[in-house]
Length: 143
Image (cartoon, rainbow, N blue to C red):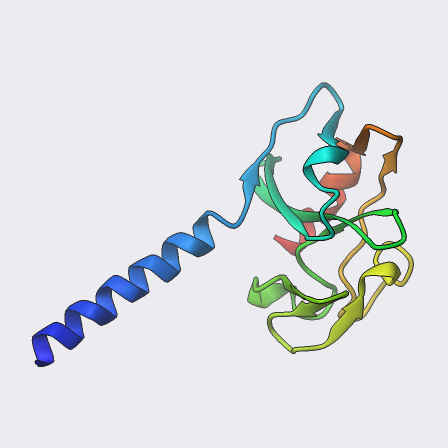
């Protein structure tokens, strides 16, 4: 019985570890920017990405909020970034996985500092969201 329980714990731990590793989709730049099709992110859920820049892996999420605005933020904040735990979604809110504070999706890219998701400058049109590599490199301090 103890052996089965131990095997079960190892299997569950491995699955949890693998699910954390696959949360982020690796993305590459197109010149001096990244470009993501809106049709890939227009479901109201955060889509997590990672990009290797300056020998660091920068993690961020992209979310189209209910008001039709594309939000982009680092998966980190000014306060809790040392813990490396990022955010999860609960309804219309992004929740810090470290301290549990919640932030309404429509405030991402508007309110900065504290435990708010650290904003990333972006522009978007009817087909794509564009983020400059310079904007992403500014987040290297969080990772």
